[in-house]
Length: 311
Image 1 (spheres, rainbow, N blue to C red):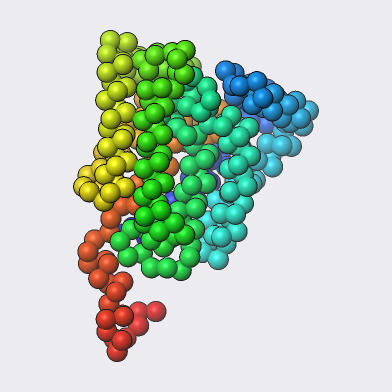
Image 2 (image 1 turned 120 degrees about the vertical axis):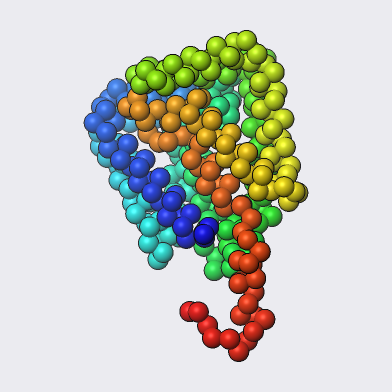
């Protein structure tokens, strides 16, 4: 059964996994800071690139100490989400972390670059999705009547609007992420092949197969994906065929996670998180319609004042 608490715990477990990835030996080296952060400055507007490069220079002399702080921060957030009493504090910490890492560690999610802003690469940046999920799952004490999001500050309508905005944005990035410099086909091919280094042979083969198909009919595929993404947003926003739309969204998110995001690069080593795929799944579950019986159960005490309390 879907509940806000269970999704909070799932989010906490993902934070703990990210902390584990941050504790990898490579992350404590100067190479991680120099290569990972500096790479985010590529193809960025001049102002954004300068901020990222300045941050790289600041962190580089004490890379191991800074990485310890980064890993411990994620560990504390993850553990905090596992206990009901510390959920709010953990989410507040996660919001602060998200803003800094999304801006510098992810270069604004790559939204201003020709390639990294693509949905295939993890639009709008995985770190930002942690913050959006935290907002949707913030505990307010309200009941979960029709969706888990009902119990959060946005409510079902607000969370549905956020969901639609994400998917509309994904559609725009799907066909226009190249900013006139690259075709949608070229963007998709670039995303698919750029993560092949150090991946298992079977995943490289899968990427090459997907890249081959994309070279042949990449632009029509991009347009098709964009139309599906718009449809996913519209159906959930308007409450029509919501369950089917969300299952399509989950399937598409998993496909992008496998092919474009290569499981966040975890199998290649050196990954800092799982990327966007699993977070889109959690967000879909937060707006997934609960059963009619569940809604009736929530209303039952009010309809029967004399009935015994379950608490």
